Amino acid sequence: MTELVHERVLELRDGQGTAYRRVLVYAERQPAGTWVAWVEFVSANGDKVLQTDRETTQSSLNGIAYWATGLHRAYFEGALDRAYRRMADLGTSSAATSPASASGMVSFRVRSADSHLPMRLMSTHTLVPGSRRQIREGGVVYVRAVEPALMDMPRIYEFLAHFRTETAAAVLSSYLESELLDTGAILEIRGTEVPIDGAAIRDALLAGTSIRANPKKRGKSERE
Image (cartoon, rainbow, N blue to C red; front, side, top):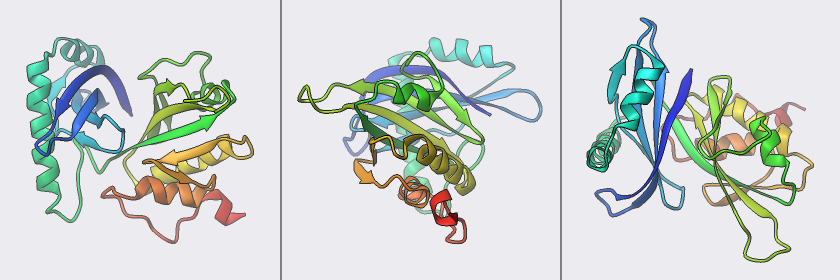
């Protein structure tokens, strides 16, 4: 199980000049009982995520959290450079690998006038930026709420979807479909509006990642 253990807001830029504002430190328990951690950087507009390789190994999750809280800006600058070079290296490979396996991190937005909808989505009574809901082998991270430009427009809720396999992406897609269907909400993945349909959501989540969609696997709407 992947755990979000630390979040930081920093203004950073990668080798191409892309601006990043959000830094996330994730940890995962290994079969031997130790924990490994890596760092992910989310671009300012939420459409790009860079991920380092394994940054540390600790004996416990608390050890990872303690390590993460002591990191300074200079460390994250170096980590962003490592993540950028890792992306460039993986770009020449047939498949990308995360610190443990293939991985995807995708930004999405939900536009809704229902203030309770994002709380149902996260299965919580309080929305806290950086909070995570585990869904099988994937998860959803709540990022923030954005007030609309006009009072009568729906509020925008920003999230990150995290998955490692096509199966995990399909489970997340079915979950989003079941939570958003018939609510009047608008779903945007990577800035593009996507129908509230399991297959369409799955394809949008997988687009741009190293994880390839299997056409034989279908979303809930396709099976009905």
